[in-house]
Image (cartoon, rainbow, N blue to C red; front, side):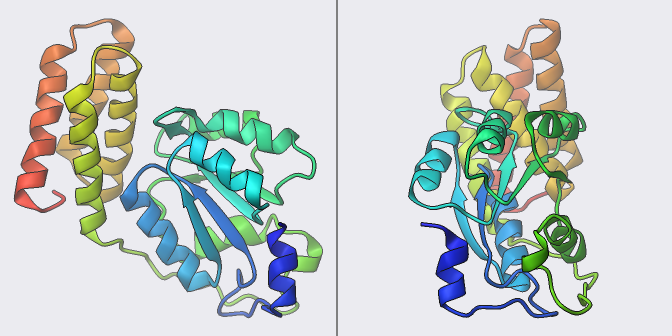
Length: 239
């Protein structure tokens, strides 16, 4: 099922205040906090959102329907979002707009090399930037006929979503061994921490990533990260 046909039948046309009305956006993102930001951005823009938290789930979605837009995180629990981007970019028919998303500075180059149409850097809080990233890449027939009233509204996700991310990280850390699991945890926590402005957790996650990449012992660093995660779960606050 093609979502453009679904919404055309429902006569849902974009407006200047809701310029993404009629679009379905598949967000492939494992962070609840980042996904909550996306939900609010889509809600304010008029778009319908569907969510996948891993590559396997994303592929299940794509077998059932073709979204207008896919926004794929590059670091996922079961592989790289770049692989998903490449497969969608090479598919026929192709998803209309494919955007990569990451908190990693190297993410943009990776996403574009895989075939993405654009890139969003975490944290994504600007409604105008979010809408522009999609609108500028839509085909002419999906563009607004008049000027778009982009606003500078800033989205602030509920910190309960951050708690969900900490619970997820704690579960993964509890089972983690030296290897790709720790790489994933470092990447995941780094992105979440930067999104909420938690410099201590971001620094610890970066130290874990560095230990893994340089071959330093990771047990002590991983224990520090796990301790910070537990502190945030107990305090029920983000920072």
